[in-house]
Every structure is written in structure tokens, then in C-alpha cells.
Image 1: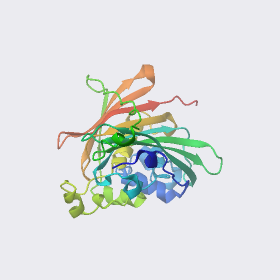
Image 2: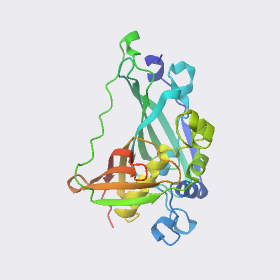
Image 3: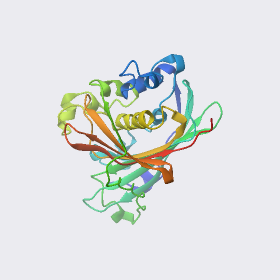
Image 4: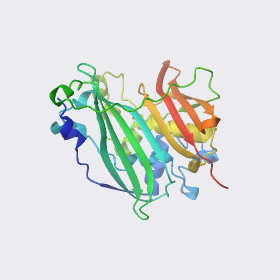
Length: 294
């Protein structure tokens, strides 16, 4: 059973993340950019001549790793799923550099015996050379096998505010992006080596027909979709993203991103589907947009 006190006071070492232009390009390739060699905007993320960094690249910096598997947490890590990812981008990244990341457990919510728990880990990422804060992230995990821990000492935090549902009307924009058949094999080279993304036997044991794509790779595809159809690949205009993960994507599938404009709030709403299987893979998405001076 989860130990509330141990998890809430979990110490994460500060992480230094050094990256090069090759890391930036590999990440973008895994997310599907560069599939059209004549698309100038996409090419700038995979070719060193005018290299840009996809904003979601910062999700690689300082991930705390598989800490839920530590027996001291008391968690059933095998039943843990990535529920939501929320990001705020404060500055664009240079094509190479070093980042400092600091993680902390923000909240731990008991939904009740048999209903699971919710763990929220927040992260701040700084540019090592300037000390400037470049991004904030919130990782929301659903611990399906760990409800009822508050019966021990009565401790449980309020749950995170839910992401609002997307509008019921037809979307203002849609874009289909194809994923590469080897997307998960490429993406795992950025740091997440979970065999469920590579080994068919492991994937089948977890209940999937084949290795699945990383949720954060689908998250990067959503970033690409918005940059492509709404922001003209101007990375500085993307101020934030938040999505709920509802189903995995299989490498090689085409994902349809549906976008709704909310001009009064300078944001887009997003949902992503795999039409071939009629499943929603991302939902309740929010893309915050900022104006950038010329």
C-alpha cells in the first residue's frame, strides 16, 4: 500500500541534462517531422542549417525515471498509467545546451479502495548558462491499484482540477499526421527504454496487440500539429499545452488532430483520434497561444 508520507516527501536529485543538435533532430524525427522532405517548416527541426527545437523536447529534461517502482513508495507500479501531461513554455531552447531540472511531488489523492489514486509530480527546468526558468511541467499519474491508502493515517490531497471537455461543435481545423512504423524504436532512444514500446512479448503481456508508442511521442505530434496548421512553425508562440491520454497509438498509425479556436482566451482546444480504429487517443486538450512582437 502507498505510504502517503514517504511519497509526498520523496527526494528527487537535481538533474543536469546536456543535449546536442543531434538529440534535437532525433526527437523531431521520432515525432514524425521531416516526413515530407519538401516541407520547409518541418525541415527546420531535423536539419542543422536553421535548426529549431520542438517545444515539447523539454519533456526529456530531468524526468525522474521509474521511481514509482521503488518498494518504499508502496505503489503497484505495474498498474500505473500516464493520465495527463501539462506544460508551460517560458522560453525557446537553443539547438544545444544544458538544462537543470528539479522535480517534486505536488499532490497524492486517494480516490478510495478499489478506485485507485492520483499522483502529481511537478518539474521546473532551467537554462544552466543563464539560470532562467524555461519550462514548467506537471505529470499526472493514475495509480489504478493503490486506492484506500488514506485509511491508514487519513491523509489525502485534493485532486488536480480536471481539464475541460472540448467543444461539441465541429472542429475549426483538422490535420492528419502519420507516425513512422519505427517511431517507438526511435523515441525510446531519447531516454524512455520501457520494453513495452519495443518488445512484442512484453506488449502482449500488458494487453496490447503490439508495442505501443510513448504517450509523450503522441504529445509531441500534437505540438507539431498546432505549429503546422495554426502557428506557422513559430515555436515562440506556443505558451503551453495540456492533454489527457485516453488510448495508446500504435507506431505506423495516422492520427487525426481536431482543433477548436477560442480567440477570446488566446487558446486552441484539441482532441486526437486514430480514424482506422475509431479511438480517441488524446482528449480535453488545451493549447495556449501567445502573441510575439515582430
